[in-house]
Structure formats: C-alpha cells, structure tokens
Amino acid sequence: MRPDIVAIGAPAGGVESLTDLVGRLPENLSAAVLVVLHRSPFPDSYLPQTLRRVAHLRVVVPIEGGPLEIGACFVGPPDKLLTVGSGHRTHLLADGYYRGYTIDALFTSLAYSAGRRVIGVTLTGLLKDGRLGLRAIKEAGGTVVVEEPKEPEITEIHFGAFKSEIDFTGTVPAIADFICERVRSG
Image (cartoon, rainbow, N blue to C red; front, side):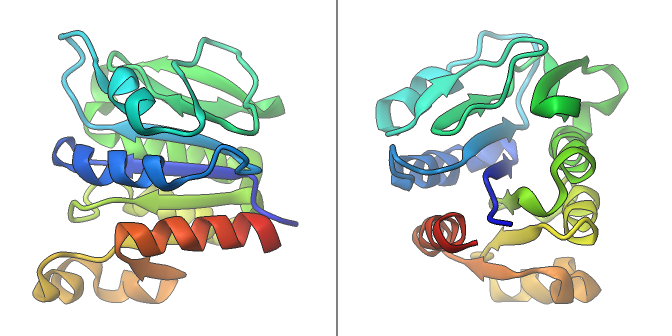
C-alpha cells in the first residue's frame, strides 16, 4: 500500500525548514499533508498565511471532524492538538497538559488510524517531541524521515539507538524528493 498521508512536525525554530519543505511539494502530490509546529497558543498564528505564500498545495486550517483530503496541507491550529481519528477525520484536542507533545500527538494518532499509509517527518530539533510518535509510526509499518542535523555530533547524541528506526535522513530538498518518490511508488 502506497503512503498517502505525510505528517510533518517541527519545533518553533523550524519555520524556515517547514516552509522550504512545503514549498517543494507539488500541487499534484497524491497525499494529504498535515503540519504541526511548536508555537504559543495565545497570539494569532500566521503560519497558514506563511505557507500559502510558498505552497503549491491548498493550505487548510482543519475543523473538528473534517476529512483528510489528497492535495491539501492541513496546518494545526495554535490552541489545539491536531490529531486524526477513525475514518481519517481530523480531531482537535484541547492543548492543556500536552503542549510540549504536539508532534507526538499527531504522529501517534496517525500510527493508530493509518499505519503504513503514513510518512512521518521531523524537521530540525533534537527529537524531544516526535520520537515516540515516529516510533509508533514505524511499529505500525509507516515510514520515518528525519531532517539531517546541522551539527554532525547531534546525530549520535540525540538519535542514538533510534537511528536504526529511521528510514531516511537528509536535507530538506532530499526529503521533498523522498516524499514525492514514496508517494508515487509506495
């Protein structure tokens, strides 16, 4: 089964990598793309507008219970956790206690609801949030992708034993190519 859901998580400092990656995905990508970013839940979010400037995909802020759509990029709202439930419908959870686990919440929900249909991608960061979700995706038969760290020593220190569970590590352009190839050929 070919992957048709791409989940991308980034820390607050990952906006540049996130924008670069989303801007490289073609409008005819045969997948739904879901994006979560660590950011404050209080100020207005400009992430959807920022991504719309570069995206070839349609950028959407999801509503509760909305269906995932091929060719759309769903951007998690700043005051809710974007997850996916049964029937591949978005489920927005109150943030509260899980503020630091935005990526894990999305990735874990996708592991349970879509399994091997998922490509989970983390950009920059040190895998503090995302590691559990990526592991769940891997265990469910999905694909795990991690942006290549800028500092070589970070790879060993922060990936450690997790390195063997990563299907692909590369730069943002290489990740975009990998996603397009996997979605196409699965």
